[in-house]
Length: 405
Image 1 (cartoon, rainbow, N blue to C red):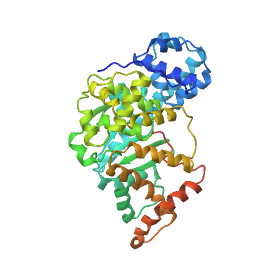
Image 2 (cartoon, rainbow, N blue to C red; image 1 turned 30 degrees about the horizontal axis):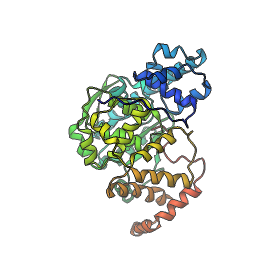
Image 3 (cartoon, rainbow, N blue to C red; image 1 turned 45 degrees about the horizontal axis):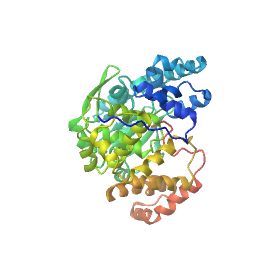
């Protein structure tokens, strides 16, 4: 691993966010002298708690913040952090139990599944689910099983949130071709489940391609099946890059993977080149090195200096991290995000995969139902329908299932 030259945290960030990064470095054992000095500086502690929750790292700080650093927190703030950490741990264990229940329920119907992210990643990277932010549950399925799995879960109280209307058999086939996931939401348990049949951004990561190399993992005393080890790095970095690394919790996932001596890094760069995903990998590595001071594998460190598109992608992510989340994005924000997503892509195939689901949304089918024989009309109308959705969507309507990714 190549040690990093310590880099200053962004001046444009508020003092509370810079303090949070220094505390994460202390928890990771990568703090510099500047970080140690920052730990004792006065800040607005209410704002600090807001940034901790905004970046979903309360559970990790509660568990791993060194005692000397914790002692610098005002007593009420330390108590609040403890409460947030315990609440997340309870939520994570509930989600782990639900994940086990759902996978067993699907298995009883003959539906194979691979669980990933969520409680599984909590075990793999953090040693227990409760130390990682508890968001939604993700399952990878064979495309032929998705509609059946959707029906099975809806019979147990889940509601389909994305798409939020009944699909005809013809629409199901089109949806499976054009998209990669179905979102469900359980209003009683307040848990979201995403049924995926293709890992977004990884063109070769279909269920059937990954199933033969599946890996068992023990979660809450039960064995679940998850993604092959070779896929996990690219998936984590691609997922973080897709969301602009807006949450430090996603970067923390990548940092823990980078510093895990049990994980070989030799195949990361060739795999990224093969999948045309070198930009997400280098962007995440650059951010982990700068913000969390994590040492990088020599090959990645050497590539950072020559990646021409990288500085702009890193600056974009830093700006997102330093912003408070907003509600429904306006059309200008959507266009900026689309431009960012395009800069991440390295192939025509990647750009097509980016545009296709955005323009050919199932919302078109709901708002303007057409007979099957006229389905092709959705293609020329797609740009106009997309603009209409962005301009006239109700302000309170969620664009995704109501849960954290």
